[in-house]
Length: 318
Image (cartoon, rainbow, N blue to C red; front, side, top):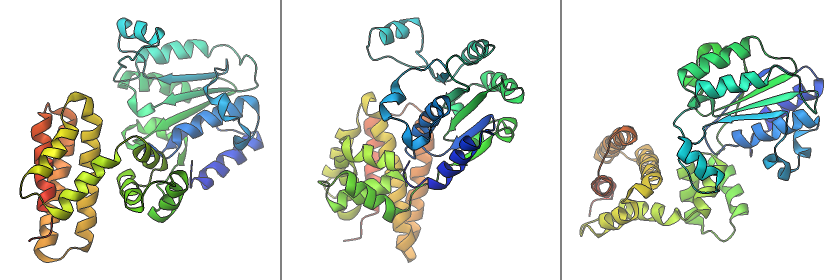
């Protein structure tokens, strides 16, 4: 929750006053701390304590007055895998049946606390029927119940849901602040790699830390190498394709597209003449590929080679 002091203080003042609004829409991109805040706020509400007094170990502990709604196992077979502690596939959306099951549990008073907290993680992953069902609870909220709705894309929500909630916006950090924070968290990381993670994260501390510690740095280095040195022999493009080929590397492909868009945008801000025109054209192509990648069944190696070719075109002419 780095850099979100204003939103946190606003929520804390409402909690301490005892006059809590029943609906809170916690908005911000992944990695900005929205999920951490919602889970910590729920615990603070039911235990009647300040946010910073909540023990982090309690966030994973179940509480009878905290109800969490999120995407569950895809089907019964995946549910069995979950119960056995195995990896399992999850649904694409939060279903209307999940919302109705939750509403059935809200007909009674809180068990141990004066308040009950409902976390929706994420509300922009709800199917339309589920959102409409939830709207009824927001219009006529149960007594002593506070809804904490996490949203990465609040513009996708029903306007009627947004209008019934107080919005807490979590803003991206400035590059300088994020750089200092990441350097403190990862003191062994080289300065150039910190800069790469900061750019790729788009101002989100959680994203930057995950990139720095999850093995993504070599991919970012390879992308930068193609931009800086070009790829006359095609070796750079093939190296990039080796990193991205296969369904198991789908998240890396998305990272590569996002980082390529940010790098081309950064180059466009300082370029002039033909270099500017080329950077803008390539950034537009990356943006198109990123949109198509979500829905199209591309051959991963061919897509990676195309990305590499576009990156190499950004290199200074020799």
